[in-house]
Length: 130
Image (tube, rainbow, N blue to C red; front, side, top):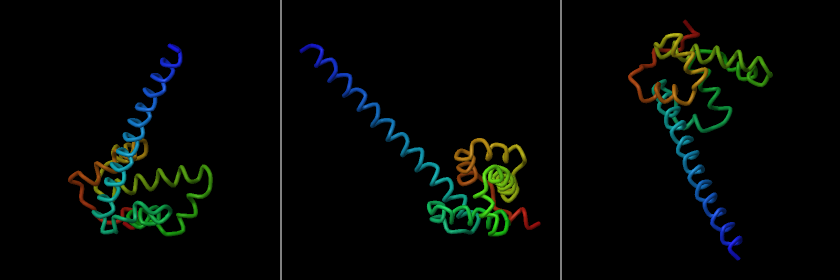
């Protein structure tokens, strides 16, 4: 009987840990969405576009001044990594940021989207169009 009680206590503890983990996960997702929303809004695009898959990439390409067909390049394995890096560099330039900020966007995208959205950076137009 004592063994059953111990098992029940252990399973309820893991359930609480799982619930806390799930809440933390959702909090991070909301934080990322809000940062992207603010970044899109600063760029003169609709903020809601950040939550629509594929369309958000189209809008991001529009922000940085790349043609719509680059969206197709994201479908090609390995090429998509190179294209994503180029887009991150262009996004940093579009907001007047340096290459160091672009490196931050490449490796810590959610955090640096929030820095763009909530920070003092102003959208200066599509960098690739210049």
